[in-house]
Amino acid sequence: MARKGNRIQVILECTEHKNTDMPGTSRYITTKNRKNTTERIELKKYNPILKKKTVHKEIK
Image (cartoon, rainbow, N blue to C red; front, side, top):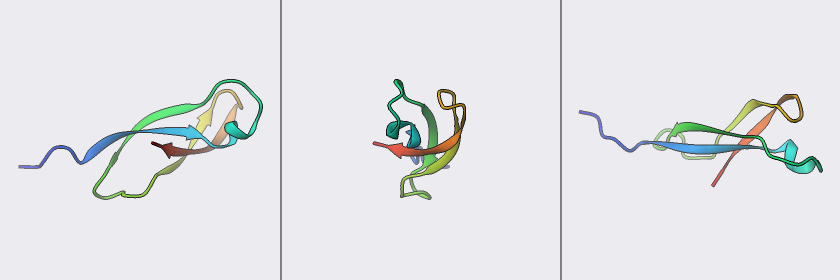
């Protein structure tokens, strides 16, 4: 039987949006396997405020 507790929820925040003076933030919630992926994840996601795909990094 598999153990529970290896998958955790993480928040991804846009890196390009923080550098602009535009209000608001672009954040996504996803899950990752803590055992297989120990480092912070980085994904390209759509930012509706900037209207383009940008790099989103995991925040604590």
